[in-house]
Length: 124
Image (cartoon, rainbow, N blue to C red; front, side, top):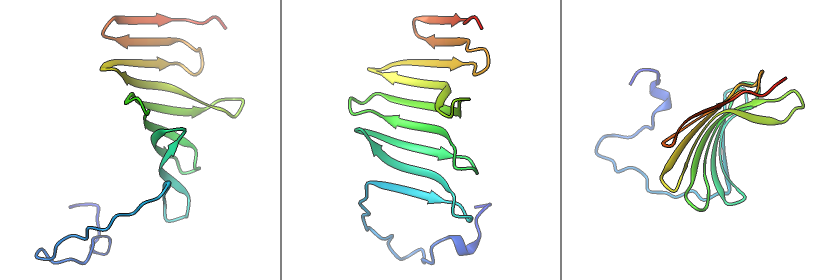
């Protein structure tokens, strides 16, 4: 188990059973050693979400499951007007996968799905 120190593992002998406690909360936040948010697990408007943040606490990757069972993964970036957009998204809805890739500079979009490959170019 490389990458882990003895202090980071629970002090438990192989014969002891693992704890069976349940933690219930609306949101879980994992922070780094500097106290900055790096991962959060939460519910937002009925969507179960797992978000990963960079060292500046900017969201960068998001996994979500909607109430209807649709799932998505997105790579996120901050736009010039201080909003968030995604440059990569994988969506699975009713068993149909779709991958959307968008260029943040030129705004070109490509979509890959079982129906085929589609590309668009937006004029600047």
